[in-house]
Image (cartoon, rainbow, N blue to C red; front, side):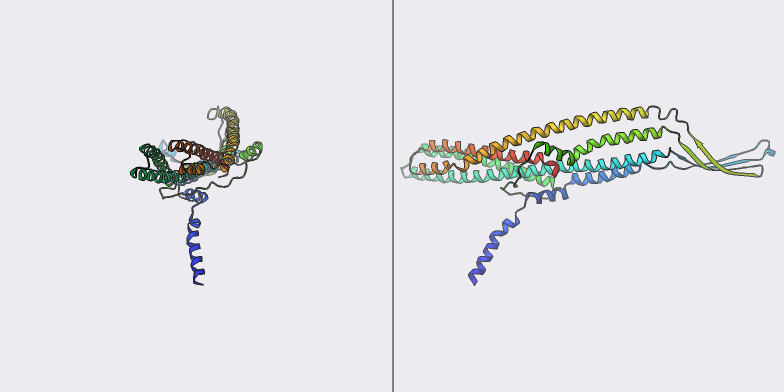
Length: 393
């Protein structure tokens, strides 16, 4: 019974690091919560919304009081009092409200676009860290093996069984491996610091060596249809046309006469007069070119949206084609490397003396060059997929 309990506790202890492993999704959740730029953008978005909502007020009421001395004195004094409220033409208020609501929606799209950019930077950093962590394991193994090989050569040299050439070759090889090992370690540290910066200065580490499992991306036209319906940057730009159309309608409403209504009181020679004040303005000068300006802006917005849509389609198509080519290359690498055991054969051949040290290092370097190219291709593949699907973040 005691052995069973110990086994269970040992299993829990061994499994705990796996449970504690931070996933990429955990990293993105933390960064979205702590990123200072996102926090500032959220506050700025709320300020913009309040600004848009404040663009639909009534004019301030106008209060006038006149006191006039009469001359000669027998004429008495005159007092006039006026409370007046000016209005735009009534339809302008509904147009302003519609324009404001559109601008509020655009603010949300703008915030989401900025949010996706930051989360994509975090995700691509995690993907590069996975690549660097995998490379670190390989370099660590090579470093340990070469150090062991060098120690063996030096021991044989000291007993008179080896030669200095093998020792020097192993030393040179170890120098190159140590250089790559330190450079890769430096990159890991820099990427970790970048994650910490994105997390608002709160430390984050990401030790994973497993890329997320990806479903194949289907037909491009279906993919682009999803991009059109979900991408916030594209939706933000497309809403420019709707906003420009509402601005044109508002400009036409503002070109109509303004109205005034109020209360007037007059006192003169002991007599008092009370009544209502009504007035209007004749729109001759103030908005003379506003409608034509709004029409030009609507036309410009339409052209800009078309250009942006074309650019988005083109860039998405290029990324999709890159994804297809990388997918083919990655499959080729996986098929070849999974069936290739050249490293094991080389180790055995060197151990039994079938190949020289220089042959061993030349052949192993060729193998590791191919394996490193595979790791690089795998990294580029996952980054490309992440960029294509950025609109889903």
